[in-house]
Amino acid sequence: MEEAKILKKGQLVIPVHIRKKLGLKPGDSVKLFDYDGAIHIIPFSKNPVKEGIGILPRRPSLSKKLLNDRARE
Image (cartoon, rainbow, N blue to C red):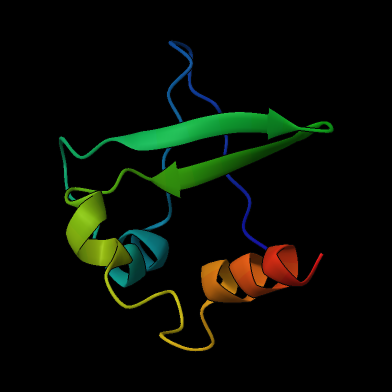
């Protein structure tokens, strides 16, 4: 777990090895959200469509299964 200080203007410095690992560069954006008292920092996707390609399994098709179940009912 890393530790960082919040600067006077509310700025937070992300440690260099984390920035390198995630490919973050000056000017890049991140998303911040609070989940039950924990702050999550998510790198903003430059091309979400391209990055999302291939994350879902090709088979079995859930929609076909649902349609078949519906037809049986």
